Amino acid sequence: MDETKVDNGMIEEGGDSREKLEKNITLFRGVAIVSGTIIGTGIFVTPNAISASVYAPATAIMLMFAGGIVAGLGSLSFSELGTMFPVSGSDMAFLKRIYGALPAFLSLWLLNFTLNGMRKAIQVLGFSKYLWVLIYDNGSPPWYLDKLVCLAVLLLMLSIIAFKPNLALRFIVVWTTLKVLALVLIIIAGFVYLFKGHTENISVGFSSTNTNISDWGAAWNSIIWSFSGWEDIYLVSSEVKNPKKNIPRIVGISVTLVTTLYMLAVASYHIVLPLEIMSNPDVAVAALFGERTMGYPGKIILSISVIISTLGTLNCVLLTGSRVIHAGAAEGMLPGVFNLVSKKYKTPIIAILYLGLSSAMFVVIGNIQTLINSAVFTTFPFLTACAAGVVVLRKTAPDIERPYRCPLLFPVIFTVFGTYVFIVPFLGDSYLLSLVWVSLVLCGIPIYFLCVKNVFNWKFLNIYMEVLKTSTAKLLNCD
Image 1 (cartoon, rainbow, N blue to C red):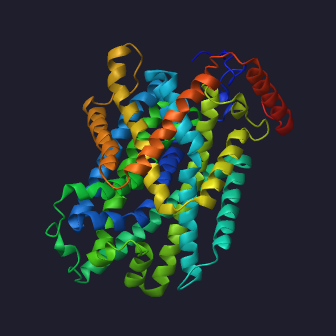
Image 2: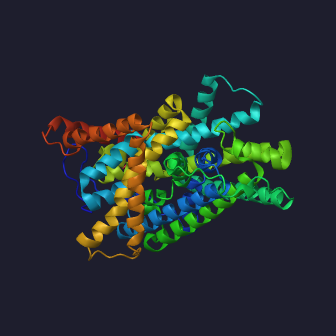
Image 3: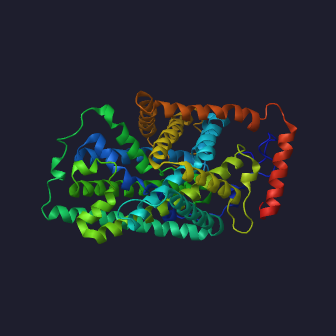
């Protein structure tokens, strides 16, 4: 990438500061980041929606396996792109190199600037839900107390990401280890329950499957959310040691590990809990599972496990989310102030601050289920476009070095599936919300031409951005 920035109202001279970020992410830490991001609220809150849609334990397990295959195909497709272009930014950086600046900006505008805090808010709200399960047997706290606790937790995690980056990476390893152990506990408890002769729930198998495939949309959305995060290693590619070698290994190990754990965990849920309970959206599956298998202590243990899981995922998504805002500035599509890196802490401090404000907004106004539905719909089209880009680049740029080449069938299958996921919401009850998000994407087009391209050559915009960056750098000791 050209190291000299174009004077377009959004960026100034100074180059790409991503190389100033320390390369702290080893193979093991990378696996911890990806696995830790994937294993969040999903496996503890989505089994209800999956079971309600397909209404058969064996079908639910097979769909979870299919979700792992889709995540694997996507991650390996991204690995080809990630080793060709080992810079932070994930879909935004890839889209720019495949299709040009406008599609990349639209991805950055919607997912990583306007809605970046949405995914983080989901984790915080999931944390509070299970926190109150520990405190209240029935009922819930006043809404303002819930929001204050959520904001306090968010502030704590942001402080770690901003001022203790190495500690944040160590936390990721610890969080991921604890989350994996929690899933292992669920798996062991479920199969011990099975070996005691309790086969009445799981023996239903495929027999009660809902054969109306059009009803499976909610199941697929839930599965996509459960596996979301496999792409996050590409948000921090600039901080991965030996990225061309380690990135394919990181995603391969992570997706295989998570898919295995998910299938066994869903099987354990269905061994212990009947379909009537599994398909009830109001049931806290993990807590009830723990109570049925281990009594009241089991409920407490697994509720705490969910809290740990959400905190761990929050740690991961705050780390990666701040990097993509920083990468957007480095790519010349966000104000240069977001390209600043703290001299003392070597972290993108302005990007982290903005992400914290965005996340706080969604925490205050958001509902967890609405946020999940919106996150799935808004994310997948851009991931699909990147996967399709693997095929495009094979034709348009065959001479670029590809340290890793995925089978071409992988991105083709992922693209077909992604197209299905995008179309289905318009055929159901959620078409209005889908239209809102599409409209928000389209709003990014005039912003791109007015602010990024600065087609009217507004001098005041260039001056303002330069003053903002310079003064902020002095104030916060950044460069």
